[in-house]
Length: 339
Image (cartoon, rainbow, N blue to C red; front, side):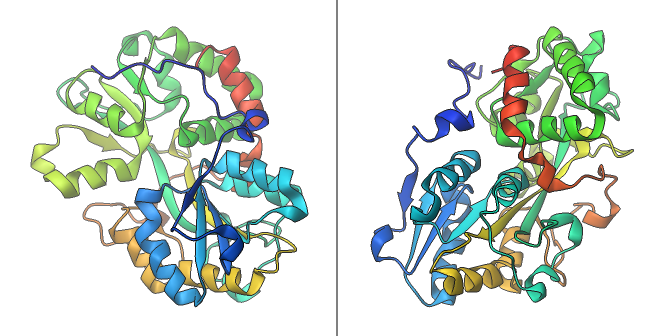
């Protein structure tokens, strides 16, 4: 059985500065031509960032950590920050830096490569890849998956739902619900979900495992976990299925990983080359083929079998930059007893 979380979330921005980031690439930040603060997982993006170093033409040092923590560090460090580029796991952390005026406006030619829905309204950050919130379900236990996350508070799902309340993607989804439906409605939904005794897991892969093994009937995850599992094991070996929610449901949020150049950095020319590389065909194919995410730059489409085209999804319409109110979301989750 998956091990329950043993402690409260440490993702509060106020505490984030106390948590060490992970230095990567074997290059000292003071000696690097470009320093990237990366909220993206090292195992996921290191091969791509190794290629980025070649494209930029200078030494690159990468500091890995949680996106919210690194955004908080950039705010705290101010003009003394080593960061030249912020590579975020989610749009909310980019929105937080944009609101503080800490990101540099990007060239229009870079912005124009990506749909306006996946770039900052101030033109200072741009999405590099997208992921969709979905419901994983066990077909032997669920005749038809719910079409809205609001159904998850119904008594029939008591004890049958798996989720990761400390996960950044879950928290971004809750923030999206707050933006779409308001704090009162979101608070009520969280209270109802908590009353249904959902099972807590360490990460999304363990949620998928739990659904696949029938420990829970439903799981709240991102789409690419399922597609990665199918690519590794074959669809006939994976019992769990996934359901893309219709009707603009908040549970169908499409979030974006993205990048922004830190304002005032003397690394701006190298950082701009990095932005261009991450929007290049080579990098976009990496996201499409290796991480099973949605490529966001024009001209590149996913080749993943049975993955619905991004344009076909009935996702909620939301300014992704508004997902930056993480502290308020965390407070709400704490009040609900979820973290």
